[in-house]
Image (cartoon, one colour):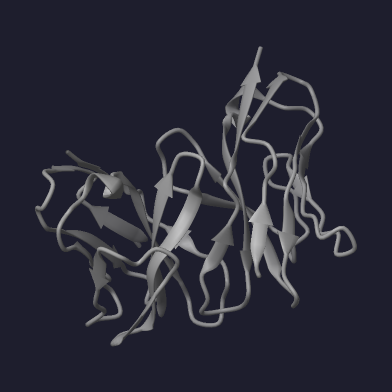
Length: 109
Length: 112
């Protein structure tokens, strides 16, 4: 069965500390993986997709097919990074995204 | 482009009432979907549509109906509201042949 697991409900770090939000997936095919971010009471916004291999707002994520992981990383957290982060898997165009349960990132000074 | 729009932003219903949550997009996207967001549950798919006239059920369809008469609009109907349907509802769309989805601002629904 297809599944996305985000093991941490809440991750609290201090400003300037490194951040790693974990995401593991279960899928027999070749998935496309995404990270979405939701700032307080706002809509979900696409942050990263694995095929683009780009860095957005200092965040990066690498797909590790051997470990079936797609962890989100940032070397130096900022207070404005505080938000809910969702990892999501797509089985292809015209299909629904499968979301993890989300991780709340709280960055304090 | 306005993107994906949803109305209303907030709604309070009494148990047993019915209502329709509106979703529209002006990007000519073929794929549209409805999710509900609950604390600790992430986003769960309610219904989706791959084009006008075509709809299908998602993970949690009970108590909801949808129709897709035009490419632009994808309304979600609550037939007889229950407290378990208290949630934040998000509509999303995706262009044909693409996998990334674009989300609306959400509707916060409370059923008392």
